[in-house]
Image (cartoon, rainbow, N blue to C red; front, side, top):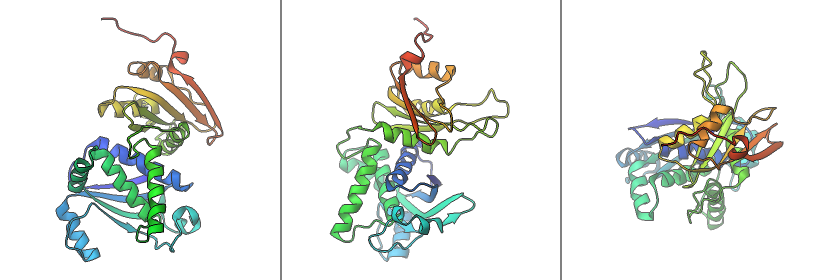
Length: 296
């Protein structure tokens, strides 16, 4: 999913990375098969209070505001009316526009402290909650509230940040996130897009795509993109990486195998291609039996 970020101030990249993963999974859980986009502004309580007063007549700060592009009929969500959603196609974004989201980082920090979890997790939840609103979910009536909560929990559980913090992420979810990451590939020279989803043992998921360069040697593979993002955010141990390609299997290259072995020599490797029709599994130990090590 394409998120157009509007940041009133610098925001931790790890927080934004988890929010991107949550957005991708929200689309997958809803069952929308084509690209969508949304505008996401992160601001403070003062700014969101002004918006809340202007658009809702409430002179107070809140955690999140949602402005859907579609007035969905009651009980109908985007996944049930893909033809209606396609009418929101935005040529510049090359995706269907769902609407605008505003999140107060002041509320994120306060609620994370109150509930005893990370600011990244609170941000991911608020984004999922708001995206559900953009797709037609509501919580005015009790029955609707239950349906919306089930959807939110399905998304959060899929990416390992459910209420009980149990990082139970299925292989299928990892593969789907890798396929979604593949759509963001920059591969004009090889025309061989690759996406990767990397699961850290602390429950976080990092995605990456291959990013090519005219010099060719400066190209970075999807696996290393995901791992560099993860390591730069403090993750050091990983248990599974999913890799998605087009029509042929894309096992990691030699450099990526050595790179992964630096941090997780026992990581499981999942490879999918042919629009998900084919999936194979191995371990890094099997595909790199004698990794290079520097002994101290």
